[in-house]
Image (cartoon, rainbow, N blue to C red; front, side):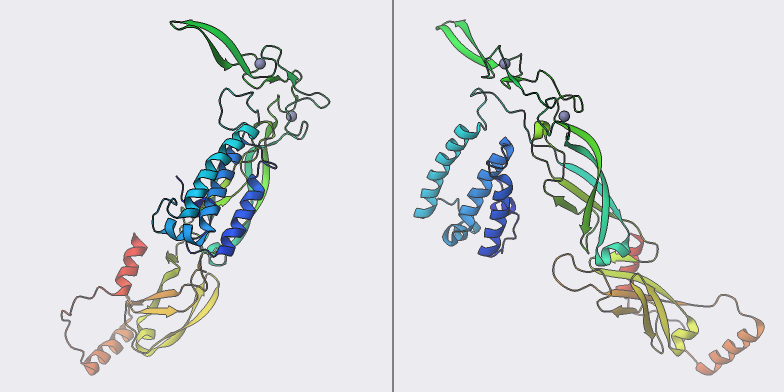
Length: 371
Ligand SMILES: [Zn+2]
Ligand SMILES: [Zn+2]
């Protein structure tokens, strides 16, 4: 059985108000008065059940602790009612029962999935896209009725609209009546005598449409965003499936991502590392002046607060972490070499020596860059 919180699409710590709001929204979409699909009625039932448990403090507490919702007077009473409720539903709306009357041509459309490629700079603040989506949509000629305008389905004269054929079968126990779907109308009970020419009687056609989407900041590769009701239209005017957008964040040559932080490497000339300077870093969201302190070492990390990615959930932004790489000159002319030699003679640096092994932050950053 699906998790009640997932069914309602709320967090585990959602308030009673949030739960009520989520239920109202779903009930409006799924209530059989507005959404006659068999799938919608099933979902409506599980949504209602989830709401009944989570809106009652005692039942919710019990559910959170792994109980089955049956302990306590309220729980037991509810479960009893739920069974009846389901039966009433199926009697009225024809869900589930295989041989109890004709089946509906209307079905919920399938979910659709499209991939959205984003650049790193687009996920810092989020972005807007008009996505081209190729799905089934309701046929506008017949409005999903499947019939040529001005005509209607006619009752099947083989099964007389029941969708089933009764047959007497001889068995050891004598003659037994069996019921099977009518082959003439395929169990629908009606026949579409003059199918709509636009959709060939399907009630839907394939079309390319533009779906405007606001993609939130902070998404990452593999994340799927769900857009309820934006998927494939169902057959015969059935409700739409959902549209899923799967995110893919493109590789960036300069910046890399570590959760909500952005990482980059800044090449600093040896002389600037020694003397100190201010460097202008071209970040994805504008220039940042960074202070290179006197005596900056290779592998030092300069952290610029709140210049990373905006957090997908919660507030604020991650940090920009700039790993310093001190660049040693590789070509010196005669005069420069003399100056460096004079400096070395005067500075009297100790000879190269082993030091304690440092698995510094920058080493970790560098591993990530390569991985
Ligand atoms: Zn049509
Ligand atoms: Zn029939």
